[in-house]
Length: 66
Image (spheres, rainbow, N blue to C red):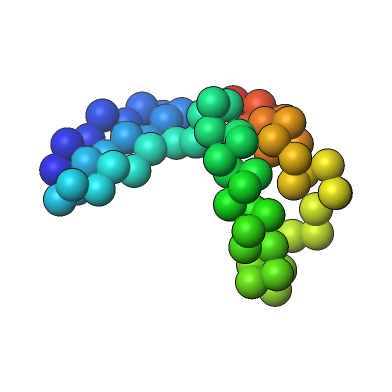
């Protein structure tokens, strides 16, 4: 296991799996994920504005976590 985490970012490599903190460059991919899984995730996800499901909406959410 390789762990290069800091207090604000996670990076771990475990048995070929890489876990890392989402980055702004991931916004489009994450928007696609949330759109593709919106109905399934609805019972567990908080209510979100329609703009969240666009790439720039996810990007804005990622910027808030920095």
